[in-house]
Every structure is written in structure tokens, then in C-alpha cells.
Amino acid sequence: MNDKEFITPYGLFATIVVTVIGVGVFSFPRDVTANAGTDGWIITLVSGAISYLLIFIAIKAIKNNNYGKLYYILRFNFGGLIGSILALIFIAYNIFAVSIGMRVFIEVIKMYLLQRTPTEFLTLVTILTGIYIIRGEVGNLVKFNELAFWIMFIPIILVLLLTLNKADFTNIFPILNSTPNEYVKALSTTVYSFGGIGIVYLILPFMKNKKSIPKIAVKSIVFITIFYAVIVVFCLAVFAKEQTKTLLWPTITLIKSIDIPGTFIERWEGVVMALWAIFYFTTFINSYYLSADVLKDMFKLHDIKLSSALIMPFIYAIALYPENIAEVYDVSNSVLPYLSIFSLVILPLLLFIKKPSKKDLKEGGY
Image (cartoon, rainbow, N blue to C red):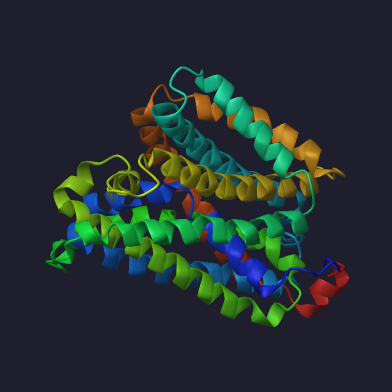
């Protein structure tokens, strides 16, 4: 168990929130509305409840292993070989998720700002920026998250308020009008949007007050769920169901639709890009750090800079593999669901079920 316990409850709350809510929130209304129509916001609330169950299982599994770091927990419970395989699958999920997110991030940057800049160059610069940010310790990462939380959510809440004059909240009706099959499809999409909850494997060993962890987890998931639901409701209220389903990034279109004569902001693309960048980088650097940290422990490296450099070529290759934005989503939908099921459901369940005894923990150095 790590003796350096310095992360506060707010640090845990901010880290979970900013890791989970990434650029996916900009396409989230389309994804959920395409499957569940005007019931999308209800499905979002249900997904939040499911996600809390998943994070609770992960927290309980970590607690059962005296808050050890993920790789050491896996090695202790499953042995060196199987533990390493499980760790590699977990790393692969995070690498794939940040790579797909990076390509989407870059496509939007090219669309609005840097049309002629090569995708390869933007990808390389983005990865190097991430490596620079995560070169420090976990404490620096958490401080970044604590600051980023306010930078992310104060502007987006203000922007949402500015769209109220265009909103017709009767557009969220009728409710409970979808088929069971549509609800299941929508749930699979929305639960994946909570994929960043795996960051608890990195943060919990460093928590100062571990008794507060379950309460903070509840607050985090409630905040995330309400935020997602509000975004869906606003997009439905402004665009209605049919238009929301056809927009590639409804939340971006929502922000761009703001038109207030006489304001000092005439073009909202700058606001969009600023929000887009911070929403992406918080998810990217936290997931990148988590992957690099597990890899560092697995190969007994002394510095996370080395493990992050080892991961870099894989992120670069995966991000550049799709030919266009349509192929990005095709690749994402064909691979990520399976990796996310393992990382979010199977792995924590395995650790939860295989609860070590106090004697085993003592003999294993826990």
C-alpha cells in the first residue's frame, strides 16, 4: 500500500468528473437521441445509476486489496502472467479510447481553425503536449484537474443559459415512447460515456481520507449524470428530436447558435474551440497517465516519462488509422464496446469476487 496519502475529497471529485466528461459530451445528445428519441435524458439517468454500481464495485475491489495500485492488485490476485495480461487489456482500452478521442478532437480543430495543417502534425503535437503535462507526479495531475473543473463548467453553464431564449422544452415530450430494444441500444451507448470512472484505480491509493470515498463517488456520478442529462434536454429543446439525430456534434451547434446582438463576442467558434480543447485534454491526460502508470509498475520502470513515451507510438498509429471522421466512429463502435465491457464490468467484478483474506494480504505485503 502506498504511504503517500495526499489527495483531498475535492481532488477525487474533480478528477472523476473531468476524466469522464470529455469531448464525447459534444456528440452525446446525437448518440442517445438516435436510439431513444425524446427518452434520451431518461436513459442518461438510468446509465448514471448503472455507472455508480460499476464504480462502487471497483472501489470495493480496491478497498479489499488495501488500496494497492492496480497492477500489484492484479499480480497479487491472479499471478504474474494472468495479472500482466489483464493489465495489458486495461491499458489497451485506455490507449484506444484516448486515440479515438484524439482523432475526433483534431478533426474539429481542423474544421474550425487549422484547415490546412496536416493531421499527422496535429496528432504529434497533441501527444507531446500530453506527455509534457503528465511528466510530474499524481499530485500535479490532481491539482490540474481541480483547476480544470472550474475552467470547464463555469463557461459551459453560462453558455447553456444563453440558449434559453431559443429553447422549447415541450420538445422533450413524449416520454417513455421507445421500444425495449431501443432502450438497450441507448444504454450501451450512454454507459460507455462513463468510461473514465476507471481513473479511481490511479487515485484511490493516494486518498487522504478513505472513508469519504463512497460519498465522493456518489457526488461525482450524480454531477456527471445531471450534466449529461441537461445537455441532452437543451439540445432537444433547441433542435427537437429529428434535427438532434442528424447533427454530428449537437453541443457544438448549440453553442454556435447563440446570437445576442450587441455582445462583445460576435463569433462563438473561439468559445467552442476553447471548451473543446479543455474538455479533451482533461480526459486525455488522465487516461494517458493511468495507462502509463500501470505500464510503469508492470515493467518496474522508475519514471513515468519512459512509460508514457513507450505508449506514444501506439496512440499515434491508432489515431491516424481511420481515413475520415465517419471511419473514426466505425472503428470506435467496432472495438471500444468490447474493451470497455472488460475494463468497466469484467475486471472490477473479477477483483470484487476474488476477495483476498486478511492472512493473504499480510503474507503478500499488503
